[in-house]
Image 1 (tube, rainbow, N blue to C red):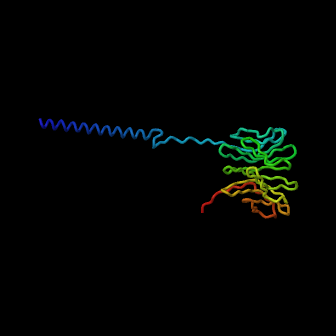
Image 2 (tube, rainbow, N blue to C red):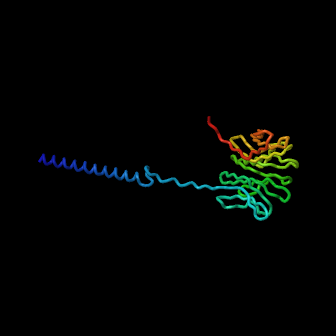
Image 3 (cartoon, rainbow, N blue to C red):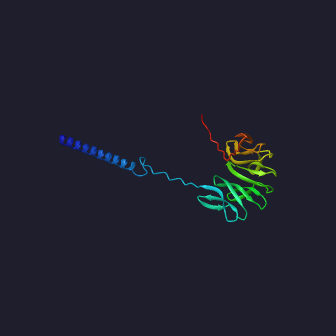
Length: 231
């Protein structure tokens, strides 16, 4: 009886061990199968493709006048009613706000203009020709580069939140064509005119002019971009 009892106990242990082994094997199979399903650690679900909005500023002739246009993903939005000529030269998007710089003719002169989400903000009073060429937004500050005629010459001008800062003294022609802000520094590219009436490509940093070329030729700076360099 003892031997039978021992035999039976031994078989019972063997059966339990066999069941445990089978359960462990099934667990391994299930775990391996789950790890290879879509979305598992070995085969993660692909990230969704990002969606981009593409904005383009410019103008289009309507048969009578040039009309300032903002294209969003190829769909045109007219910024003026087209009864007078207008121009859009630059666009900047900050969060959900879309800024466009340009000009609109008032029947007598060109008025430097900034559109924010399609709403007009006139930067000049319309008594003399002016045009906005570039817009840049840094935090809550909106910078616009352009020029305004002083009755004799074009004056390179930077508007910050609608307030004008003259970058040239007005004794010779000068224009601002592009603005870029990096930290607390404001860079403007354009040109000044030397006493010999030669246009000189110029960079203004925080209002200080740096000629980029000599006055023996003809040069104009049209765009500026600043990038941080790590040495």
